[in-house]
Image (cartoon, rainbow, N blue to C red; front, side, top):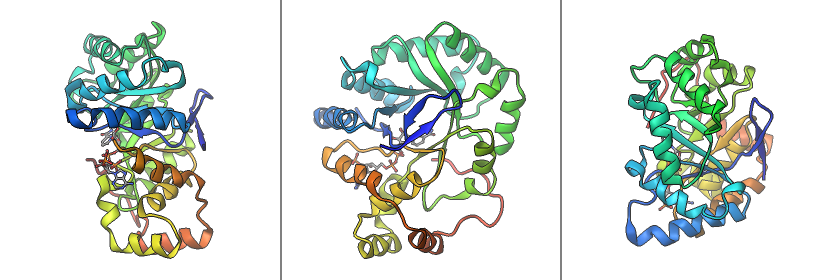
Length: 277
Ligand code: NAP
């Protein structure tokens, strides 16, 4: 397993498990739970969820999957922007803890920017941290200007990660946001790393993968894993696909392969507005 160091010095796996849409279909539940457990067995011990996912169904399924194994897991969940107030954050956190059947969240993220002032959210996160309910806090979908604003607020520099849309077909953050975060040693959690499976249908990627003896998903994930300070959180509810995706950890892209990928999926030539899914 490759690891990424959080600003506070703790190491977390660079390959985590996404869980959007997990827990939505009863007939898939057993396989989804088995997949998350297989991920833990393989050392992919970071699990990403959110109160939003299935309005709590994803957190509930995660709670079931990690039962008896809580201490192995680095658990990430997110608060809705409309709950990100002084009173709303602790209440949302309690609901998440209950669904996750645990007494602490390892990393609690603001899901995206809403209308509640950042200062209030930071204050609430810091209070939860002091109370031992969350170990770290961070943000998601914050662009460079938002990030700079967050950073200037008292306590804001304790931000442990920014979770962002980042994959071969969405490279906008490489122009300015990623370098800024790197300078501050704030890791990026790359969400939708295979573009919700759309990248797998890309003819250029398919041809590249075939030429180099990998699958398209492995190329897309290996490309993210090759970047310092980046954690990829692909989602799958199927053990077979998880096994395929985990194969990306053993791939070391050569400089020539990276150059070829840059030709096929060019990096940004200028600043771009932050994309979200
Ligand atoms: P993703 O991980 O890029 O793609 C997931 C989709 O790809 C699922 O439909 C999955 O289906 C399929 N898939 C996975 N591996 C595959 C493989 N090897 N071959 C074929 N299909 C495969 O997209 P995502 O779920 O949007 O992003 C990952 C995680 O990031 C989410 O689950 C969530 O935890 C997080 N996220 C965060 C935000 C945010 O705003 N912070 C936004 C989006 C996502 P099966 O499950 O059926 O295999």
